[in-house]
Length: 283
Ligand code: S5P
Image (cartoon, rainbow, N blue to C red; front, side, top):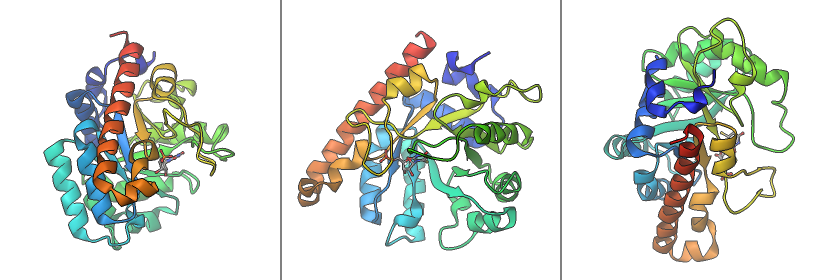
């Protein structure tokens, strides 16, 4: 039976993973299934966008390697905001190497991702050893992993049997470290199995926009209603649809004005995502 018809709150007990539980609790407390993807290249801009959207989101997603002036003070401030404003941090690292290498990339280097990011993600291209490598670092810290079972971009190669293999690998991860997928629908429910077939997973979905259908570079957008109500996804990930005003000529000239628009867009997507969820569960 589908977990999609159940409330976020009622699904919390089905998860053993602490980061997944934390996310579901945040969603329920804030009545927000909105994750904002903050793909900006300076520390000041990143923190300004996070502050503008913090109240309206359950999650902030980062690409920490695009920040030109990265330092550990940035992640300390991000972590403080995550506690104060009640959101989960997701570093969208898309690990894609052998287990030993990813365990080092996750724990070490300049970014020390495992030390501050509640949730991260990985491609399954290298095989299930990638999960073991990341789990060897993340489990003790209470972190969670999402597998990229599907992608939003045109012509991506993650279709068909690849997604089914991601679902199998997640079900076979008995540590519970793998707690969900990046996917375009409830992919695990389309791929039933006898072993751990009923286990609930989170579906986080990028490629969400209310105003445009693409970005001219392969991205494809669907609306929150399509993603959450029709397809049953749990969290909408929105980037440029929310912070886009900062990228325009006008936005660069008047960042304060642009940040007000960022906040307005976050409110708009939060509302759209929550309405779609309420319709889905028949509330
Ligand atoms: O399939 C994917 C997976 C991810 S995580 N498609 C995506 O777009 N993403 C990420 O979501 C992408 O890296 C970017 O950070 C965000 C989408 O940003 P937007 O500006 O197009 O909303």
